Length: 201
Image (cartoon, rainbow, N blue to C red):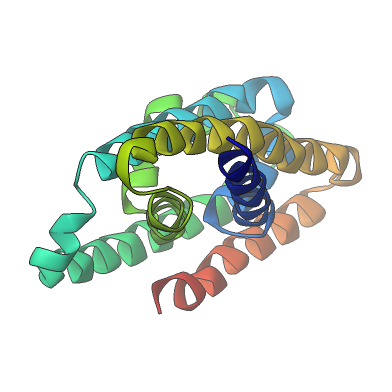
């Protein structure tokens, strides 16, 4: 029991590192917080947790083993993720910034979009596969440690995501001109592009 507790503490530290450091999810969350506020970004946060949990369960049930059997799937995932990240960067960079914008032209990422994004986000795959392998025990204790790891990931992940949204919302008042909003969106879109080589190597 003590060894399992120690393992989960280590897993929590690992999850905090994965969920707090800059990556596609956090950049998108900060952008959404700055452009739409905390309340409208909540479905995005929930979508990340739902998608991450579904991915986590699928890997625990053996989906991760497909990469070993068919390495081509890993390459396909990388290509799909790069294409989608470029699309998201474009979407962030082209968010309407004029004071008289139509609210219908500005929509945060939906819960469904955020959930589906986890399945092609290389950082989500890397973190989840590592958690499912390095932070589980063999034998009879496997499923206990695996399910605790799933719980820990969500307990740590939600506040970490929320923090990025709050940070984005905190600078919302500073984005009080068309030029500043445009520069911010271009900067965040650029950061998304910069994450591509970092997470697909």
